[in-house]
Length: 73
Image (cartoon, rainbow, N blue to C red):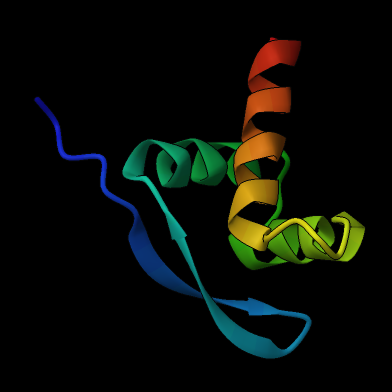
């Protein structure tokens, strides 16, 4: 069985460094989406960060974004 424990990575959101913990399949898919949208990972994460409700964390918002994009396909 694969290990899907969250993996922490550093990203830059609108010039501010932070870290996000996501499971590797989400990092892989999020990176694929960034490439498909011709965006950097940081740029896409910044957009998600700006649009997310204050009571929902960035990691959860990225997971939801990935799920919504997968459901569109």
